[in-house]
Length: 344
Image 1 (cartoon, rainbow, N blue to C red):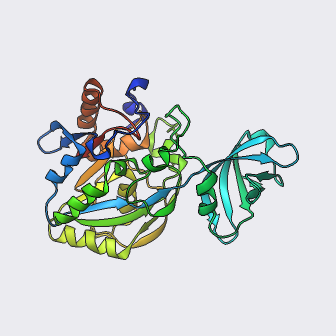
Image 2: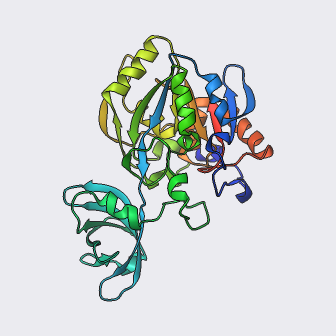
Image 3: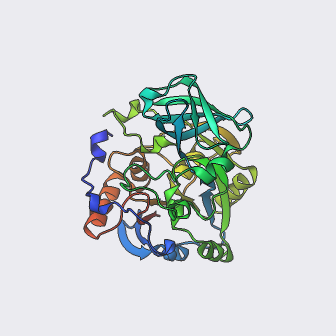
């Protein structure tokens, strides 16, 4: 398939700027691959599609308050520092993006308050820098107080205090993402309790979503596109839960493209999940044979994004594009704060 196959016109009015007032009451489009049917439900109705013995795989990554604003030493020039990934926890070394980049050179210090500053120790790209913070250990606690929520670039507004909770899943635990696993934003603690009471097992995995999730694909030949590497972990107990479900012919419901990529990065020759941790740059686009997921919970994604490519590989290209046309016509809300899709 080609990049242009995933081009469609997304009006700005279809992009959700704020989440639904009740997370689990957003609309949910249900695509049945076998019957080729498309239905509209509320997200809370997802419970009706699950049975005792099924497993729900969730990503427990936590979005960090990645947007920091500081002042350069001596000149007091205002500099934005966007945290990308932690390289060395003990030495507090990070990859970041700086803006304006032309003012930030190796050796410069950027002060955020009277306690926290960082020093630039290397250049990585035109806007990328490697920095060392002055507080070794847990930088996450320090930036939690002074940073801003890293809303996606297509949400054209400044973050507000509510975004700190809105742009975070209820099962977020492990600091490290700079973008939310958006399919997970539809769940509430009440809905999770109901799912567990129904006898559905919960299998947490981890994939820290990076800015690469928003990076445009720039090659028409998709086989030449390379994904950014992201850290992931499949816990032994979660692998065991998923494998038992596969063996007992239960269904594995996977929440989001990030979980799907983590699972597909750690499959045995027999078609089971193996415990694993490391970095993945797995790129999934049609045609692709999924090894683990029986059902995919996702959102409505941007044109030409790697996310819509994965969803179309799961649903079938023609079926998914038909669903997107219907979603546009029926007023579904698109992208991170938008409505949900369940593909079964």
